[in-house]
Length: 251
Image (tube, rainbow, N blue to C red):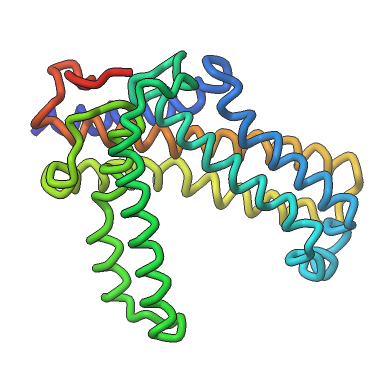
């Protein structure tokens, strides 16, 4: 029991420190999220969004802001995948995609897109008021598809849909738990940072926006690292070596 708890705590430590250490081990990864986030903040300052709460609300859905938001979302997603590949086994070769199991990855991607579309259809059927029980059950049911997608991304060719829906449950739950512990508080700080900037002088606003951009980069690193940590800790049977690294398909 103590060894299990020790491994779980080690995974949490790996997630926290692994995400932070990417700031100097592979700074390009957090920068993929940081730069578009900062670009959006530049646009927000130019739009006068931080002058007051009313000004922020008035411009929150403006076309100018959302033009940058699309790049921000894309950068965040790419940074998460890059961080996951780094700690998933690729390390300094995270950018080298030759080790990716592309056929499996595309199938997994298609399945994830399909279940997202089904989820939207369910929400539409309930007029965006889906019963909590149905929503929770659906989210649990599709959890292993995240693991099914991650395996091919890091070149683990032992990952199959059957394996994802047997051993993948625990891995997905671990990844979610590690992400919640790290990303959750950071997201609250991210939101508070915006509120704190409202009505402040220009120097304070810029200082907060620089800090906020770095924070978003760190959040992306934590999410990716949490996915990698949950994957290797949760998938002990079938294809993993004793040191917690993949026995097959290493990138």
